[in-house]
Image (cartoon, rainbow, N blue to C red; front, side):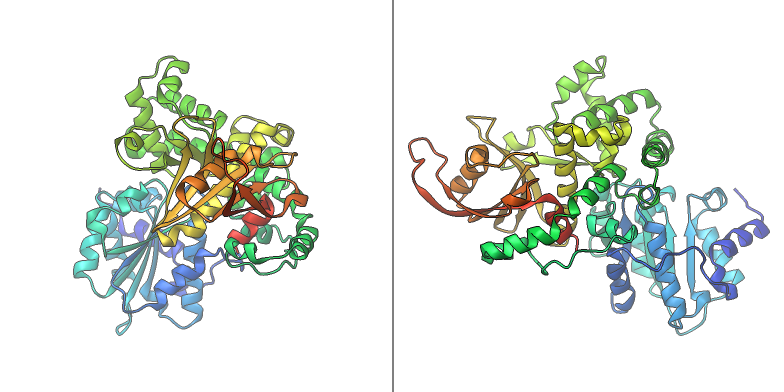
Amino acid sequence: MEIPKAELFSVLQEFNPWWTGQPLSDLPDWERSAAAQIWDWLEDSQTKRSLLLTGARQVGKTTLFRQAIRRLVNEGFPPANVLYATFDHPILKLAGLERTLQAWEELFPPAEGHPRILFLDEIQFVPDWQVWLKHQGDFQRGRRIAATGSASPLRDARAESGVGRWQTIPLPTLSFAEYLRLRKIPLPKLPEVRSLRHLFDWGPGDFSNAATLGRPLTAHFHEYLLRGGFPEPAMVNDLTRCQRLLREDIVDKVLKRDMTALYGVRRVLEVEKIFLYLCYHDGGILDVPTLSRELDGINRQSVNNFLDLFEATHLIYRLRPFGYGKEVLRGRSKIYLADAALPGAMLLLGRRLLEKADRLGAAVETAFFKHLYTRYYPDQPTFSYWQDRSNRDLEVDLIAETGDRLVPFEVKYQDAEPTARRLKGLRLFLEQRGVDHGYVITQRWEDFGVIETTSARKGHARENLTARILKIPAPLACLWLSL
């Protein structure tokens, strides 16, 4: 469709005020941790790769781009050589990508001797964007391109056409540390911990001192579970309004707009039912036949298709069972919501979530997984869960696998000591796999410390194992993983 040039120029000038020397308004000075990765990419003038920033709606992708632009311009980069365009805007969506770029170069010809840097928001609305991005990397050496996508599958970004041509940065919702900084809550003066593994070298006094310093974090951590990690809702003081924003601005727009516009979904009621079912079973192992039967017989193929779409729009994570072969491929997936606050907001629980031990435990497990995923993503780990074949009650909630290293985690967020008996599944996994260290994410601060373990095999209960288990309170685990 032909868009009048005057309208296209007007939209571009509105999005790019630095072209005329105007400042970027309403930008926070505080930046998310991913800002450092974006700036590293900008400073690496030798790389030919584009940058792809992926994540759910309203996690701060646009703000990160605008902050990077502000820094570029403030450091003397030619303003005319920087373009920001969002293809969520109707005029730009109708004009198309190439027409938008032509208008930019016609309106403000770029300065010679410098690359042209393109920040393209919501690129999933551009038809065949992967092919276009590939060709830019191959044939347009004078352009550097950073793009965001909130409704484009991460696996597409790893497709063959993108290998070696773009760098992907996943942007989850706010970590616990980022949430505290956003709400201007001072961080306690805790010891620096670069890896949870280093805690195995601590002594009893170290654990006691850290527990004393960290104990006030519990109240803030519970607020974090209620409010979530989407920046705008998280800043709203009224919890009812905060959770309404989560439902209306985050979930509803994805379910009712993105899935319809991008994937042609017409059965919105079925999509809503399935998503609500997942909210009830957050952190649980999903049985598709059961879900299909309980939701008025939605056929299994439709359920699996919708699960793919939830993952594509960054609303859920899926974990396969630990192991290899056909049994694993056919195994049931474990589902985590993108943010711990989404189930409580969708189910209208409010503060009652903190009074429901099962719901609170599920929220903590979801939050911890997100922190684990974010921390270890650069190492390209595989995440899974484990169940003993002969006794499904013996399980491990999370296993991170990087190379030949296995790191198991069990979440026991309850007002009771996680005794060796309650950790039988974790002990058995450590023993069977020859793993030296395991972790238990706890609620009680007095449990913080390392315990020795005994065998979980029948008839071997008195045998000591070389493996050790660290029990660590959830607020500390999430905080240290996000610093």
